[in-house]
Image (cartoon, rainbow, N blue to C red; front, side, top):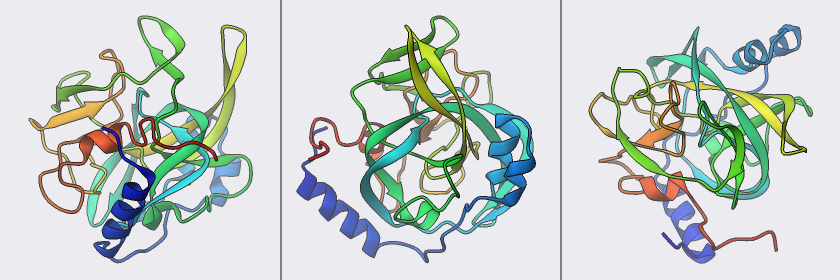
Length: 242
């Protein structure tokens, strides 16, 4: 799907007008400094309660791209707009470029503190590091696919759009080091911050072997209805750093 910059700006303005009450959340917790592992540090950043509004914006900046990541569930829970979800963690490459984000979750610039934390977000770099059980870490273009969301292995879903991450150890792929972040996010919760039901169509860039793929579910109502393809791979061939 080709979307011009002017159209994106217009879309953001329309969605901004349709936004719910905006309450910035997900700021870094001081407890993160005491956590010993990347997973524990990411979980420590995740608020126990989030009131998520909806205010879609675009920006050019660094962010953690979890679109092809494999997520592992934890014992932690978070409540988003009154609904409780299990929190998962996953390793995501840090990239720089155009990103589409929800201002009610992360603001106009990251409010997580210092160089040790970063936000997860969506974008579409030409290539980025991706992991699969079959091939390990590779650098490749996004490969979107659809699947049916369910409770069987490899059929769940995780939303990692606008949640906090702890900067982690870089991954070396073919002699090049790529920056990474360990991110946290809710399971079975969609990008419109509503619960996802079994049986709906899911969209992801993750490998079919992913335990819980990061993605989004088909949106039937609300301001994002029908925009799944855009959020899965935004800015295709339309934006650069100029």
